[in-house]
Image (cartoon, rainbow, N blue to C red):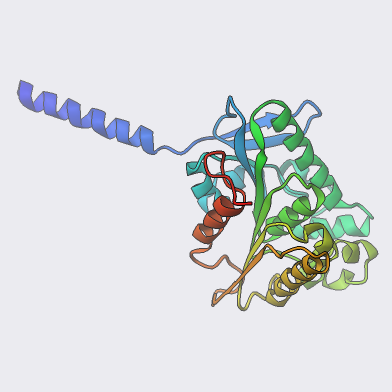
Length: 282
């Protein structure tokens, strides 16, 4: 190899290496609050107050490590948002043997009188407390989103913590009794109390975005529509305006997030929650 060819080869190698490095995704980093709540971020914690999006789906690693479960977080990260997640109940380190994992674990906890939603809300609020106090999160720009069971918990968290400026739910569970895991427990008092529609008033007048396929029998298309209408009704009865965006989209696959939803949700977040450079219109 002559000097020219060798130099060209080295130059191309450096370009390829630089391109590979620049295209590398942020790593999922694990943290713990002073009170012991474990949480994850997509990339390092910022050194200044930053708009923040909580994302819920399963384990924190699988959620932030997957473009599908990051949903609109992919676009919002490019807009400067910090992405945060936790293990949801009965997943990852939040699984408590001998209980089953996943949704069956939720049903088991309801039978035990264990309010898994309240526990999840407590952990999320604790993480938000610490991120604000530590100067990593800008409290004026905080949102939450989630997929399926994570969408349910995202809605519950937004209803529980008024610091959440906007919530997006992708193909969300809204009524536990629709799920196969809860069919035999429909009359359980805790199961009934955890129906999302009971929190309609807490979300009245607040920015809520929901997308659901038109034939989602797993979590219930009709139930998502009913929830959206209930939140709107509660807002109007209070003399306010509805900020509910509901998208029912043709989706022959059934329980999945319809194509194009992430762009719709990201644009909605940037409009309703915004960033310091582009705050939401009042």
